[in-house]
Length: 541
Image (tube, rainbow, N blue to C red; front, side, top):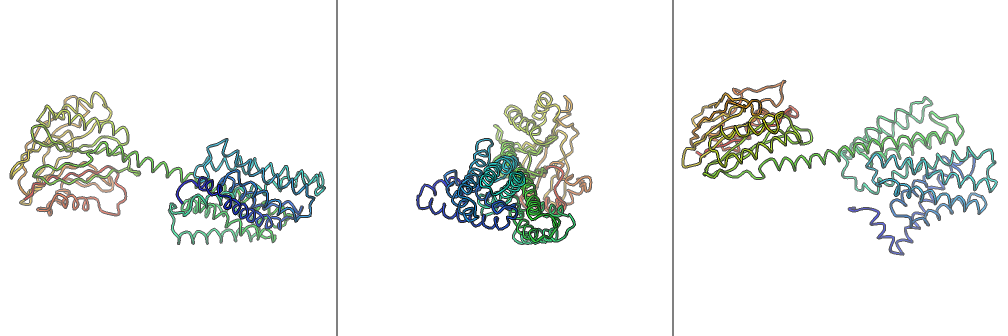
């Protein structure tokens, strides 16, 4: 059911026949719920501690608009017309019941940015304060005054009658009204994390706990909270409202039969207490569900922002270097895919050579993104007028010292000159882990350079080293997240990484990357503590 339910409802109500059908259906539902509630009226035939019609009325006005008021008025009039009260008392009660729903919806629509999905905490609290507490006073006041004018109650019973009326209507809004709003707006409930079998299990838990609580006279109503919390965590708003309806459907009949912790009280008082318990449970679970929903919304937003920002800091598509195979593996360590500190870049220089860059910025998130962007664009700009990698990294070192001195980074810069057969490369490193070269004859070479992390000192001690890549050779560039993914529990060494590389002689770059990550990052260890970046460069052989 895509779209806003209220927009669809407005379209439906523009059709006279559908409007008349809606009036009849809602009036019938209101009448049926009212007769059920009045069957539980003890002190006064027109006043009951259980009054679901209030929730029905508020929900339909919020969903369908103010034009639906005749349905509420008709249902309320028919329900009270058979209670042997004077006609003017019946009309007063009808007016109070109708105004109650209209006032509640008006307050929610005008005073707050209310959303009928109840996915925000302030929306749930607004419904409680403005509708369940405030608007129900309208019906309680008008209705009780109507009974007093019709000599249906004594003046001394005004306060007791008003309290029973008000609390009964409040429970209707909190339990029935919220259930209708959520059931309509969340259909078909595909967004909840829990599954069908889990729902059945939790329903059995909630039902069994409720039966236990309301069949013993020991006051253990607090036992309802844990299963309701579990339902809210796994099924959010739909689970919260349905679970509270289940609690009410078990608690009310047992309490009416003088069972449970409120046994011994007067019929109205014990029903009020049971209704209060279910109302508080509904409010609590809905607030918890709203907190969970808001948190997940924030998480999705962060993921979207992080993904967009990360994409802007990395090449959209890694260009193909002529005569070479390349493969990249990148995995940020953040729980919600936050922007990582590792970065890479591949770009051609004006002289026909290619630059391959792998770096690791201290920190993560937006702060790391600033340095990552600075590194990427400084290196590209420097490569337009410098050929030696050490001089290019020196420019980046100066830029970091000027602009982000508290965010040093390590960088490996490889200048590749593709050609027929062997490939000449020049390498420089600013404190970065040494690359490993897997030779085609079955050996692994390291290229260690004694240099400082960029951004620490004005002179980082940068030097260059030449590398000859022969057919079948594979060069591995990586960040320290590959070896320190689960530090301090497990820290791999360069020897461990070299041992993993040795059996991969002759494999394509994509297969080398896959086998290295499988061996270095085995399943079952959880989430790595650091970002992981792996770049494989191979000369076909």
